[in-house]
Length: 389
Image (cartoon, rainbow, N blue to C red):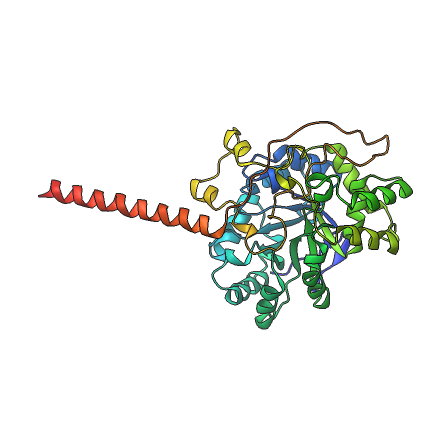
């Protein structure tokens, strides 16, 4: 199957000859396991052409519904999805396509290295899926340098993308990954980029971000997105506000060189020592879009299976950065930094964000579940034997 190459106004070239829009609307973060149809529709109406979803989010049916109802031609959209946890890649992608209601996606990612049993064999399978036309481009997510190197040893087709958490407070930590990707022609996608505003307000990067925003007459959010672009990365973000969507997309109208080298260096320097001390992700002052387990459990749209719920924070294990999707380009309802008059703020306060369990805790829980199931089966067999006698 030969697929036409997509053409987008604001895009970055991929190493396989295709291109990727420089900003995408994500359906992770607080949207995982929720009906996101309305928000995806708003994103499409606002001008987003790149939609990001994943099997693990369980939002693909809603993304597909929004696409169908939009009436947009398939060629006008760039769709990214990711594989499921420990599901054969071919089966996962075909499930994804069925739920999205499309014949192919533009980008298929291995969500995390532990989502597949063998990194090298998984990449060989990814190459077959690309060759068959089920996906135009293939890539990875949350891969560190060591995982990328393992992939590159067997790759006939290089990963087109590595989607990682990236913000001024973890840039120093993520820089080796970014450098390796740039050296090998792999585009970096950045999620959780608004953490300095949403998760760690009042930190040292506020000063250079504020100064740059005042000079350019733009919002702190837009300054951060310009910083992401200056690092050569694609932005992955999400919000429930159409006004915010317009604010985010307006970054495409700003010259890539809007931030000076000095301003970029100042933001890098301010975030070099990591986030400020304090409550951090558990702070009650977080914007509403950060998620908590309690908010999921009480939501009428929560429909995650029990096993998936237990494994819901596994994707944070392999990344040296904050947990994936903890603040995936969150909805900026309250900013501690000064905003131009055209961007009013609100004072909504969310529930605290859950902390990911440790490996030991998760292994223990899974072990207990398996032992419980084994015990129940044993009892059933004993009872069956008694009745048969």
